[in-house]
Length: 171
Image (tube, rainbow, N blue to C red; front, side):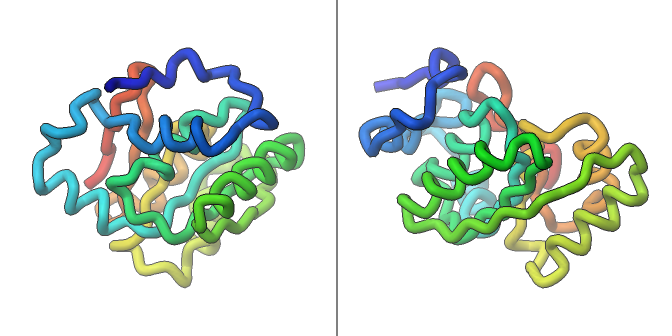
């Protein structure tokens, strides 16, 4: 059975329960659960730490992390002061699924070198080959900063596209 997350875009997370988590968990990338290539599964499993950017829209930060093909052990939730409540909601949901989650306040910055330094410092103790960054909810400057900071490294960079497709920018 295929579940479409598009209708959940404005789902109020105070009502989030385990049934919905299971639906998200079986949501598939490209809508083809059983047809994923073995190499793609290997890529998904190597990334056990994910960095996400809290936003008003929660689905792009939930669907990939709760997908059963990922082996997610830890999530770093970055947020700006106005999104602290959403970051805490994400943390609560991840923790309910036995995923360690940490929140990190980031200051809104308009300088790419500062963003690059901030992101690299945030993940300095994480092996790059185990780290992936979900760019779906990052603003344009943080998207550019993440790409610049981790271009040509083993860090996975990805988006959850509006049609629920999982798009790797790298590797």
